[in-house]
Length: 409
Ligand code: HGY
Ligand code: MN
Ligand code: MN
Ligand code: MN
Image (cartoon, rainbow, N blue to C red; front, side):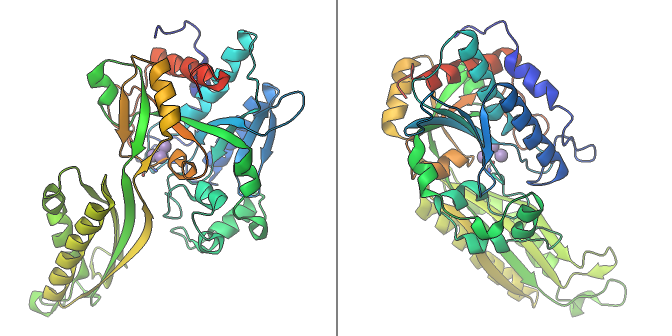
């Protein structure tokens, strides 16, 4: 695949390079329905409308930009897209690359005087990262019924505001949110282009890969409870410090995960309450992210961590509670789409991914594929995430061919 000269994706990405930039953490922080993410949603709508696409935001907050047939028949539509929300301090490309590449792919087709013989849509899904309300792919889960809408609407962010309140503030009507079978029935195939969140393509020397599957993954919350007290007046032997128990568990998580080849276990977030420097915590919430290709191994890793937590909590005279927050089984993309992509792109490696995507949620309902674009740093969910201009343009050109049906999708 030779890189095209025009810098379509690069210029689109440059236009949003300052939106949601996090000057404290580095990288980008764009929680769903925050000012930064709403600004990006507005940017996308303007760019889509400038291309003559028919833009609508559905009752679940998913934006659909349609390149309709003259008949406006949307049955069997080819849909591509991704997300615009980010993790705290995330990279520039996780999400926006898929959206910018979709806009660029429309430009490619227009410049070539081509148009698909089926309706085409670019979709932007809300709360893919689950950074604000704790459950990833919240928008696509609501759309597909993968989560009860009542549970989704009641989810709270760190400030105690609910997804319902913030959806309403974003112009949605929470009472109308819920599964949308009619919308899903319109989709003939969904293909998501995403920055690779790893080193596969770097090591293989290729710009684009075909996705094979998404590792099963879940999120659990461990809540350690003890006795809040004064840091200066409480003797060490008189303490019931939940943070000591939590720290002991976290320190041993790598060792537990290492017992299971391929397991990934992470604590990226913990919240001591009340969180004072001179205060022994009364409670600590610890969020656990565990992933493995085999769902039974994921469950085993979690159970081993939970057993250790019970043991260390008891040793500190503390309690501990484990609660599953979300769980996604290992998901394989549509074998037919994948095979046709492999035939059409013989140089493209086939890679699985440890990262979740809306494509993973949609895969249970519509034929779904993914394309990954080379990330020279191999780093993601951090500011070092990167895509070279040439690779970004190549990705958009491959996506354009896929949207045209040239790759068999
Ligand atoms: O957590 C994930 O795997 C994704 O980035 N939401
Ligand atoms: Mn992503
Ligand atoms: Mn991500
Ligand atoms: Mn993702």
